[in-house]
Length: 201
Image (cartoon, rainbow, N blue to C red; front, side, top):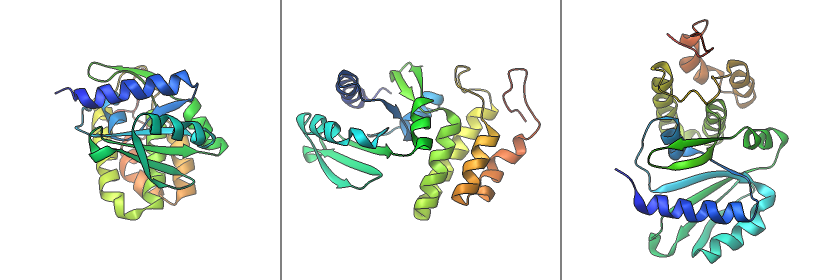
């Protein structure tokens, strides 16, 4: 079922970010929806440049949101009484982070419309980083990775996304100390690709 309130909030937010020329990309549960796995979510998670913080803060305050938590890597906003939901922003400040933002693609979904979203490979990278930074959330994040892999194995991810880049994923897995985690999901795919270069079982 379409979450009309969430879609309305997203449309308003996209309008303001685009108007101010602030690049962003969808991550989190909404990204899974754009990959082909509809998930109920009342939150919006976006990737954005850290240097955009001052303008972002002004935009969010004009829209009636209050920042209730802010670090160098993320900011969390809530609307008064939670009426318009919660919006989390993850900041990218490094060349690698900027590259993930640049690699985003416009995806189209029947329920969500057209939105910029991170490539599936970068979704893996962000999930690995989240688990490395906060192991307490590994159950949820691993469930998301497992759900994505089920989509991918069944060839349900739209063709306009890049095939999973094993080399890129393993590069970051080594960096984040998550090689064993990724082996659990990617090793069964090794050497099994279809004619489009996608992994298959």
